[in-house]
Amino acid sequence: MRKKTFAAAALLAAATMTLSACGSGADSAKPATVVAEETSQKPSTVLDQPFEKPDLVLTDTHGKKYDLRKETAGRPTLLYFGYTHCPDVCPLTMNNLAVAKKALPKAEQDKLRVVFVTTDPGRDTPAELGKWLNGIDPQFVGLTGDFATIQAGARSVGIAIEPTKKDKNGKLVSVHGTQVVAFSPKNDSGYVVYDEDADVGDYTKDLPKLMKGQNP
Image (tube, rainbow, N blue to C red; front, side, top):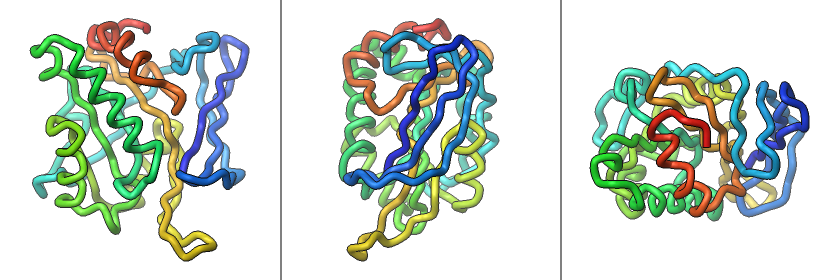
């Protein structure tokens, strides 16, 4: 299930995130707001008030504890909340990031951290996450854990997620935001948000700047 950000037209504006299901058009009225600076028609928004990196300690695909702040400190980091059973936007976003990452020099590829936090921990075990991400990019970090902890971490960066539930057809679905949050290696703050319209070209163009903590 997806949730999209719409940047308002003022320098200090609210980016309203609405929820809808991955693979469907069902909407839910559950807004969250962030203060942002509009960047015209680009799929990225440079935040006027950057986010702190979520204080998340979860389990990685090897079954080991992963402290997000500690493990990604001083590294350019892209954070995304989604789930492996998502039929559309999650795999597309991760594949776009994987292709864009490969355009970087090898040394920078190794510095970059792309972190995928599941919104469906009941099904996304460490093994499931590892299998799914290995098919996209083995360097991507997959994290799972307690849903309430994940939900609080997502909320801290303006992204709302809901517990996995059955839709009207009895299919399990996870409602989640589709934003990618970029964290600067300079101060570990989340200063750029990408919506689901960002494509591989956008990420390929912006990554060299994000690696340095510069505005795209």
